[in-house]
Picture 1 (spheres, chains in turn orange, cyan, red, brown):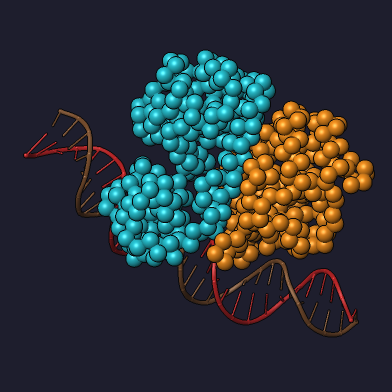
Picture 2 (cartoon, each protein chain N blue to C red):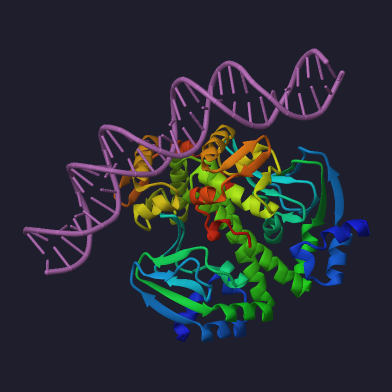
Length: 230
Length: 230
DNA sequence: AGCGGCGCTTGATATTTGTCAAGTGGCAGT
DNA sequence: ACTGCCACTTGACAAATATCAAGCGCCGCT
């Protein structure tokens, strides 16, 4: 991998505090690849060969079973995926495909497991990352089990507005992906947006505007133990 | 804690391979407590003070939000809970209450974090346990998003039959808890059982009998990437 | 043994969500 | 600029799930 590419992923929480030699070693055996949109990077049930890092672009994690399919997560730049499968030396539970033109860093699973053993700081970072991932998954379960689809959408909008810093949100991906991510059909997402129009939200294409935060918040009933990013 | 009590929890995957001194240290600062059924052990949003280990009994992990409540997991003997919150030094995402008379070992969170640093074997075990927990949570998400409630019940029965080793299953807890665990109302669970009666399942009270495994399996469409225990 | 409570079931109905079908509009490619 | 594709929307309907209400039956208590 070129040194320039390596620098980019140094800021990843997983790598931020680790030893320089460890990072160099990981980077030396890893490589960067470019993909057009719509490419399947990994497929569930395959053995975990590489830790993947999204340097640029957008990657959708999804899973299928008996003909149905759902989006588990959308990974944005400077995010890693399938760390758990890599560490446990298991098969993937999720598939991954690019949603946009993307640059992905791939680091051999064996090398990751080796570095975990040799660099205590890396091991600590791995523990933090896994714990964070676990808690995010639990929050997802709570979100699905305790809320209706319109409520999930309302809270997603509030959270995304917070991330994008303002009262307007630009959809980072297609509505069909958002629908799947939130656990509903595209048709139902349209109707949920229609519902939110009476709760202080204005939608035009991929542009969402929060007209009345108080009203939307009262409808969404946000809960830090579900919605707050760690 | 008495040495006898300590031996019991030594078999926990989290402790199995760790150094004797580490275990002794954890056990020395920890203590065992007995609880009657229905006692709340921890409450979501509280800071994570102790790692909890179920030595005996049954503990329900649950979460509530805006008046609704759901069961995330039921922890059986020789299981630990809220490891992730302890390690990340965060607040709990889940509450816990005993379903039966239980014996719980409580180990101070600070001591756990300390031992992770000093015993590499313990650190490895923690990583494995966290990765396992993460993957279990992802499987839960897939189960919820990709299946109907009757399908979830069918697969739960098949998995439980496998665990209990045979074609009959005895419910380990109340049906209302199972309903909440599977993400449905008690009424809907009753109807799901009724549906399964046409798919080779016989239910009488807390006794479930699989009359036709082939038929039930065809209905359930089990998927190792959702149902298989790791 | 009798009694009361509560978990479970069942029926009727409402709500939520999914499915199918048709139509619209924006965007990319020619 | 035109055209065709495809994501999105909307409507009508079907299925899944929740809610409300009533009754049953088991279990523990006195």
